[in-house]
Image (cartoon, rainbow over all chains, first blue to last red; front, side, top):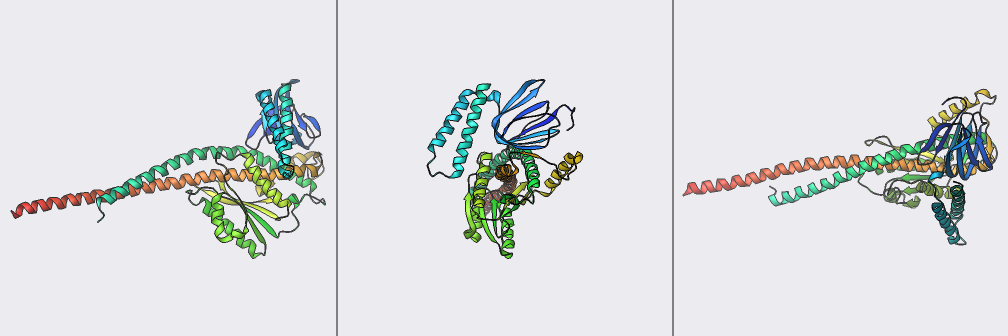
Length: 141
Length: 305
């Protein structure tokens, strides 16, 4: 676990599998209350993650970007663990794909009956937010 | 003495059964490998989730108004048991062992004067429990894992549990499922979902990790910064944790099902082979006896002339 002291162990885990586990110089996570960067020696932190893009930095430049559709992050001085419900490398997102998802998310919200269950409404809204964030990610790429 | 035609028909029928069981064995073996991979791949998430819930939970421990999902409702009157079985049979003792475990649990809980409710995952569980506990079954979920268990399926089951909990339908929720050990052995396991109770070894590991982090701090437990507040994080984290634990249980159960089916079908194929051998022997003997009888008749007929 203890690599050189100027890297932090970054883990990205989805329910299906462990996606990334590597030592990085810095990682920027889209927290619920604003993005935060994690460098070695970060204070203990637990935060919710909003739909957005995680950037892995190396040598002052972004090495890798991954889109996540929300989740949780746990940070300790030597480790940063992100539990994501869904994670896709930004390079794999196409504007077309994001558009389709956005459209279907909007349609799903429009289709909801007035008296729809809270649960399905929460789902639909969550999906819409994720799709919007995906769109932003696709455009920025 | 059985007649030749009947024997021939029986041999053919056993042979075609053997073809089916051996095909099912192959299919189960292929599915087992996939299911096992999935179950193993999902373990890190469940482990880290549990660790996180434990650390957030530790920091709100003892505070008034801790979420009921963490601290419990303050009573233990009604138990919900989630029974994980398969939709299809022909998998040996897979469903039977789960139902035996559940029945034992129900009787024990009733002995303590508690109410028991059942949520059946998988059609076989419902069919099996219906006979004895039909009034206690409050729901059945079928069709999970047709093409590999997906996270969304686990989440759907968990949401059903969560909404029942929020409606005050039960106080304690336990899931009963087969933990996959090998294709030969599956261990019926009970795990408490609500209120949150970390598994014993996991707990130890979490504490060890915590102790390591807090080495250079004065407090006994690590002090986390929370963004947003603990309560808000918990409100999101706890239902998600239930979903993850259910998902994990479903994956284990799916792997166990395929393992159990593979073993059962392997046995069936072997038994069919033994049976064919025996029947063929009888068939050959009967035929030979018939030929001998005919020869004796001819010979004695010729001698009589």
